Each structure stands twice: as C-alpha cells, then as structure tokens.
Image 1 (cartoon, rainbow over the protein chains, first blue to last red):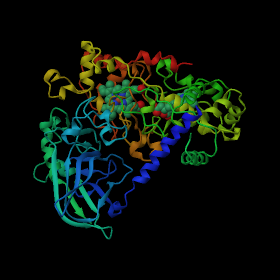
Image 2: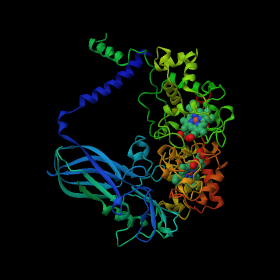
Image 3: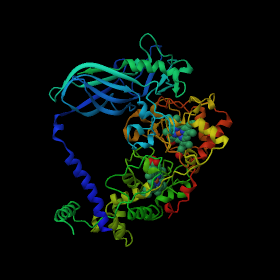
Image 4: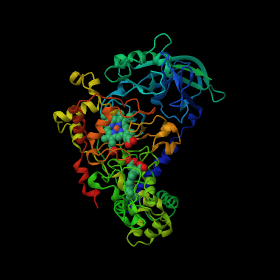
Length: 253
Length: 355
C-alpha cells in the first residue's frame, strides 16, 4: 500500500517535471497575444438584459444570449505560412454582470502578418463528433448541441421582445443555427506586426442587430413563424446566418 | 536494488509531502463510456478509504448538532437521494426554503452546486448543510472536536488523509470524504441509456415523448414532422439532462424583476437580472424525485408538463424557449412517459450507495 502511494505521487511529479523539461527556449520568440471578441448591438456595447434596444420594426428588445463557435482560428503570415491559434472556440455573452468582451490568449510567433481567418461554426470533422468524447469542460462539451448525439449549434441569438410597445417583453425570440452547409470561412486582410513591442490589439467584433437587420432587410420578428429557429427550419435561419457571417469585423487597435 | 538517484528522489518526495504518513492509493471509480469523465480535483482523488469514510459520514447523524439528522435524512437513496418533501425539514422540525435535489451523477456537475450555484464543488458544498440553522444546525468547531475524539472516525481520517495529530483534522477533510462518496453516485443504466446503447426499445408512447422532448419535429427525418416541439433539451441536455446554467422557466409572474419571492441565482451574483433564475436540474431518476422545482411546488410530473405546456408566467427574464407548446393531453402524457424512462433502478438499489 505504502509503495503504491509513493508511486502515484511519483507519476504526478514526473509529469510536472516533464512539462518543465519540455519548455523550449526557442518559444521565447513567441509573443503572448490576446484577441478580443467584442459583441455589439447597433454599434454599441452589447449589454445582456440590462439595455432596452430599438429594433428597426419599432419593437424593443432585451438581449439574453448571443454566442457563436469559431473553428480553425489562424493568423496569415506575410511569408504565406499560417499560424494556427485554435481549433475551436465558443464565444458566449449571456451574463448581465459581464462586459461585452471575451478574450482568448495565444502564443504567437513574432513576425509580420497580413490577415486572420476562422470558420464560423463547428468545422465538419468536429461537427461529426460526440460531445461526450471531449472533456467535460471542453468548448465542444458546453451543451451546445441539438440532441444526445447530434451536431452542434453553431450560433445562438436569443432575446425577449416587446412587439406591442406595452412595456412587457413577452415574445421570446430564439434563433439557433448550425449545419455543415452553413459552415463558412471568414478571412480578414490587414497588415500587422507582432514582436512584443506596441503590438496592436486584435479585436473581432460581431453585432447582434446586424445579424437580424442590415438596414435594408430586417428579419420580421413579429411573424410567429420567424420567432424561433431550432434545427429543422434552418431555411428561415439562412437569412440570419448570411448576415451574421458578413457583419464580422476585425480591427487593430 | 534502488539506484542512488532514485533514492534521492524519494527523499525529495518525502520532504515535499511534509514527511507525512503515506496516503492511500487513488482508485478509479468506474464510469460509463458515454459520459465525459468526471473532473476530479487534483487534491482529492477518490480512495477506498475516503469512499468508505464519506459514506459513513453521509449516513451518520453525528454531523447534526443534536445527532438527529444525517445527510441521508434529506437525501434518501431510495428516492434517488431526495426526500419526498416540497422543502426540506431540518433539526427540530425546522422548515427550509428549498427542495432537496437528487444526487445522481452529482459528480458530473463541474460548474456550480445548489439551485442558486452558491457552491463551486462538492468539497465546499458539504460545508454548508452542517452549519445551516435550517438543516443540521451545528457549528463546525463543535463537530470537528466531536470527530477528533471519536474512536472510530479519528483513525479513519488519519488513514484517509495521512494525518498525524488530531489538530490536523479540519472541516476540509469532512468535505473531501463526503465529496468522494458523492462522486461515486453514478446513474447510467436507465431505459433511456439502454435505448441509446441499442439494448432496448421505447414503447410507442415513450418514443413520442422522446421526440417531443428533443424537438424531433425539427429534424430532417420526416417521421415526426408536424409534432409540437417541447424545447426541453435546450436546457435539459443529455447525458445528465442539465446544461448547468441558470434560467427563469416561468414559474412565477413578476411584472418587475424585484417581485420574485426567492431571487435564486441573484443571491450569488447580486444582479437583479438573475432574480428568479435557478440552475437547470438534471432529470435522471426524475420520476422518483417528486415534488418538483426549487420550492417543490409541483407534486407530479403531469403538473410539471402542464406548466411548460402553458408557457408559464411572465417575467422579462423568462427564457425565450419557454412558451405555449400546444401539446395535446396525449402528448403531455407521452412526455411524462419519456421522463419515466430516466429511472435507473440499478442506481437506486445499488448496495454500494446504501448504509
């Protein structure tokens, strides 16, 4: 018994030691870089629940949830190579006490870059996996799938609407989108240098209103058939999805 | 022959562990294939000794100030570790505020514990009931001195946590032992699981309920097209039938967010927007865990389903997925039948979990 317990401790320490040994001095060229994912509503900081937002049809909204997955986040280097930052991230805004900025931190080799790319949604090979294959705290096991063993929900927009302007936000809006057909690659061009000295802050902004309305075409939230998209009626969602895809912005600050 | 280098390593190890007696070896509590593994805290792996000690503590009224109430008084194994009351009753018949939740698969809830999420893990959760005046009504210093003097418990704590002197025994050790036992409470052999594994088939009615629960009407497969969607699996997501997040599911009308009687999650976050939101409960063994909701207001699953079917009461933070479902009485009954397939009698009867 005594011996075994030492062995267990030994292996723990050994793993830790190994990790230390693995530390690779050439990685010192890597710069710890934070990417901000910012959420907005009509170009203002998205405030979950606490703000009352005007909707173009005259209704008012309280946002309750805005989230999306991105896959294969990469930086495009000036020499034509690609630097993979992450396979998958879930960016979620649902907390009235949190701000509208989600941050992710990566090790990025110093150098010149000409752009950034990601896929909006869960890429097909991951979308075919069972959430339970991932650790309980993995972004792919964050309870964002359609049912027990089905594909992931790529993006969600939820809000409560006051359609009648009577002060009650009693119409739930719930748009859940996702399918391999919807998976879309988004590429930004923009020159920046990362060397640890005055590096730009990379900010990826998504605007919840712009996914629902592009100023000309507005999703008709008063139509009972358009208050919910869950799974099958994705045809209704393609309109929102299309706008969601096209409104992302990258800024260097 | 042990090589000197290795010997040196042992010496370092001994010092690192503070020259404490050896700890018992961790054991792997077996977990079903189709669950993502429990995330064990590094400083509290399960051991045979810890498991046995935790179980003993769970069933022992020594934890309450007058030795009348044990954890199991409110978490009975035959009721999937609930107590059958709308709200719990503690020492001297004191009435609590909330309904006792079941503990099946509690080790998988890695985000927060309690209806309002006020505990982060099982280790710290266990510290609450002991001192709660409505539950075990005790004080930790008193309990710890009882346990230190106890001829059965002290050696068990000593063995489990490698303690030398009695003053080393703290509430943390009680929490850790209870956590080890509770992490072993795993339910994965309900009819639902057997159907998922291809070992059983739903009856027609269960199948209908399953289709409503999981919104199969929305699926490309036309079999269930035209059926109402229950929207349940936005929040009650398998395999544990909870997404562990906080929602208002329309139980009480609140024209103002300030109107909620039990503000739930807001007790922890201090945000009025969380008023009246509670953590989605897991639904495993739910047919055994009546009455339902944080205050035990519904006596039957039928009442729960008719609540959801009605769309619930207005509050501006009622979740957008709670709305009038338009289920017929037969469809309501089918949902109830599906919920019954989450009963796992091998869990309830598991001798390892009983005293």
